[in-house]
Amino acid sequence: MRTAGKDVWLLVDLSRSMDAADVAPTRLQKVKAELSTLINRFQADRLGLIVFAGDAVVQCPLTYDQSALQLFVNTLQTNLVSATGTDLSPALELALARMSATPQAAGSPARVTALVLVSDGEDFGENLEPTLRVLARSGARLYSMGVGTLEGARLPRPTGAGYLRDARGREVVSRLNPVALRRLAEQTNGQYFELTDRRNEFPLLVNALNRLEGQAEQVRTVAVADNRYRYPLALALFLLALDILLTVKVIRP
Picture (spheres, rainbow, N blue to C red):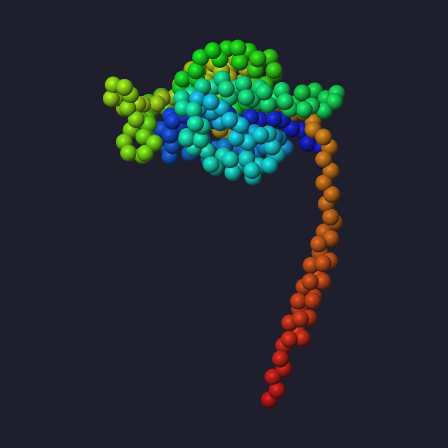
C-alpha cells in the first residue's frame, strides 16, 4: 500500500501560565484533550512532541505509533520542564535540528514538515528572528494555536493554595497574546488559530494540515492472511464440543 506522509512536530508550552483556567478545565488540560483528537486524524503521518518552558525537550520523537504518542500527551503537566519561564527559541532550534537529522531516501525530495505551536503567547523570550528566518528557508510551516482569553485568568500556586503574586503583592493574571502568535505563523507561511472559552479552532488546524501535500513514502506491503484463522478456530471449537460431549455423565434411572 502506498502512503503519502508528512512530518508534524507538536510544540507544546508547559509554562506555569498554561495552568490558567480561563479555558476550562485549564488551558493545558483542554489542549491535551484536543491533541488526542488531532493525533487520531493523521494515520499516515509521523508526529513528534516537543515540550518547552524555559528550555525545550523532545518528549516523543517522530513516530507512526499513535498509542505511544497519546501516552506522552496524557502525562503532560507544567512541572515537566525544570527550567521555568517561557522561551520559544530552544523549541524551534530543537525542531530544526531534528528536521536536519531526519534521513532522506536517495533521490527523493525532502518530506513536507509542519510545526504546530500550542501556547498562550506570553513572553517568548528574545531574538527569535534568526531562528524564524532559518525555519522559513527550510520550507517548514509553523501553525500557531493561541490558548486562553484576552481577559485572562489568575495562576494557581503550585501547592494549590491561593494564587501567584508578583513582587508588589498583586495577583498574577495571564492573558492570551494573539499578536505574537499570529506574527510567528505569518513569517513562516503558516496560519494562526485559537482555542478560547468561546472558540475552538482545532478542527480548522486539522484541515490546514490535511491540505499540506505529503511526500509519497515507501511502498508498504502488508501481508493479509486470507482468513486462515478460520481453520484452527473451527478445529478448536470442534475439539471443545467433543470434550464436552465425552464428559457428560449419563444418568441412569
